[in-house]
Amino acid sequence: MKILVATEKGGLDDNISGVFGRSAVFTIVEVEDGKIKNVEIVKNDSACLGGGVGIKASQFVVDQNIDVAISGRIGPNAFNVLKESGVVAVIAEGNVKDAVQDYIDGKLKPAKEPNCGMKHGWNK
Amino acid sequence: MEQIAVTGGKGGTGKSTFAVLLALKLSKKQRIVLCDADVGCPNDHLILGKDLKNEKTIEAEFPEIDAEKCTKCGKCVGECRANALFMVPGKPPRLLKDLCNNCALCWKICPEKAIKPVMEECGKSYETLINENLWLVTGEATGRPEQAAEVVKTTKERAMEKAEKGDALLIIDTAAGTHCDVIHALEGTKKAYIVTEPTPLGEWDSELMVGVLEKLKIRPLFVINRAGVSDDKGIRKLAERSKAKIEHEIPYSEEIAKAYSEGKLYNLNIL
Image 1 (cartoon, chains in turn brown, green):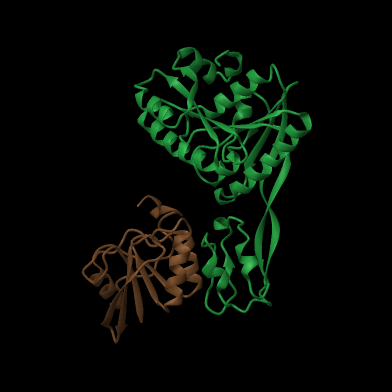
Image 2 (cartoon, chains in turn purple, brown):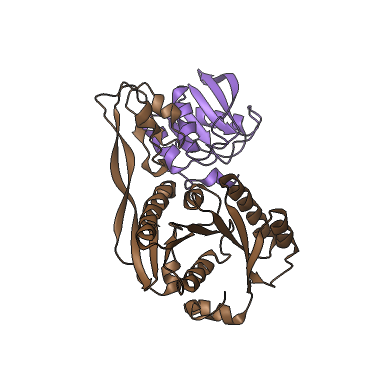
C-alpha cells in the first residue's frame, strides 16, 4: 500500500500540510504487512502553478499508483477526481508518522466530502 | 477609428465613474462609443441610470472528447496549462469545465484528432443608446472567470464595429488588475488613463499598470481621484518617472459622494 501525505518539509517527523495541491512536497510512505517499509520525499510540481493545482496534484497521485492521499484540506476538484480514480482521500492534522500509523490501525477514516472550497491554497 | 482606455490596476478608484463622465463630456462635441469591458461586474449603465438593451449571446469553444477515437495517450492532460483535464487510468480524459479557458491547445495537439471544439455560452453583450451622440456597449460574463477574456474580446469587437460605422471615438472601460481581461481590453489603444487615488495601494497598482502599458506601447495619463484624501507625493513622483501627465484631479468632496450615492453623478460637471 502506498500512502501519500501532503507536507511542507517532508518526512515522517513533519506535520501534515493544511493544503493539498499547493503543499511544497509530498511524503510517500510504503506500507507492507502493517509496517512502514520506505519513505520518499518528492517535490510537488503543482505547488506554484496558476490554477487547477488540485487536479494536477491528483493526476500525480493517480499516476504514482497511490492508494491513500492524506492532507489537512482537500478541495472539491481534487476530492472528486481522487474518488473517481479509486484513491482513498483522508483529511487529518498533526504528525505524518502518527497519521500513517492511525490509518494502518483503522483509526483514520476516509473523508466523505471535501472540507474546503476551490482556490483555498491560493493565498498560502 | 481612435480608441482610448480607462484603466488603473487598483479596484474602486473610480475607473467607471471617470469613463462615464469622460464619455458624457466628449459626447457633447462628437460621437462616442463607451465599451464597458469590466465583464465580471459591468456597471457603467448603473452610473448612467439606464437598462441594458439589445442583448446578444457570446459563445466560446470548449473541448469535446470522442471516447471512441481517444487512445488514452494523455498528451492533452500533460499539456493543459489550466489543468482542466484529468485522466482516470483506463478511461478517456475528463474535462473540468470550470477550469477551462478555451485556449484550444488540446484539440490542436491531439494526435488522434479525438478532441473537437463545441460552442457554448460564456457571456452576453448589450448595446444601449444613452444620448444622440453616445452608445454604451456592455459585456457580461455569465460563465466562469476563466472564460471572461473571451467575453471581453467579443464585446470589444462589437464596440469597435459600432464605433467604425458611426465614425465615433471608442472609450474602453477596463476591469481592475493587470490580467488577461484587462490586456485584451487595452490592446490597440494609443493612450490610457490610469485612474488612481493618492494612497500607497493606489500608487503600487498604478506602477504595475505603467509597466503593462509600457509593454503594450500605450501612452499613460493619470487621473487622481479623491484628490486631497492623503499625501499625493508618491503618485506625482510616479507620474513624473513614467513621463505621464496628470490630466485630471477629482476632489474628495461631499457633493460628489452624495451624487454618487443617489446614482445621479451624470448631473455633475466634474471634468
